[in-house]
Image: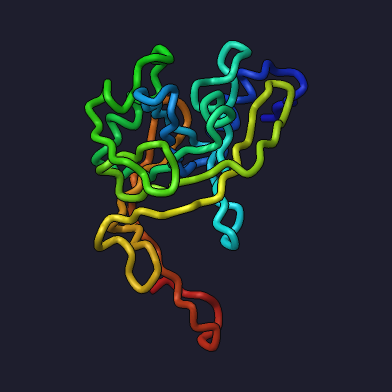
Length: 206
């Protein structure tokens, strides 16, 4: 089967891409729509870009030709918090993708407790296993749709006790979720460890 992307609609190309690039990590992002309204939304075009300084990036596409609340809020305040959800939070994570009025805070509507951040003005989710307080450093526009890649520098990490061992996050304890195509997600599943000892020859599963 061959598919020429020049001959299909952008919506069809989107459906194809989200089924190819899987699983995708999810940035669960809080921003401020107003001093009292905490906007919350998930974004699965998400990655880290640098460790010095620590930079995270995620893409926010437009909605009906207009910026979504998250993008509009970040452009206005320059601050936000990126969270990593565990599998116990999947229901709320998925529900936060629904379209809420701009004056309705998803965190409050979904019954998610928030706490004041320390380095930014945007509150963070109290029970997310990982939260990264970020300040915007760059916005890159891609494609004809007006998608914006938000790059932020992490000012402070919050990591649940017991997840960070010898400076590394224990993924099995974190129990993250990834996005697949459509309204489907993946849990961590089996973890395969490779033998790092090159002296033994080809890498082996241990």
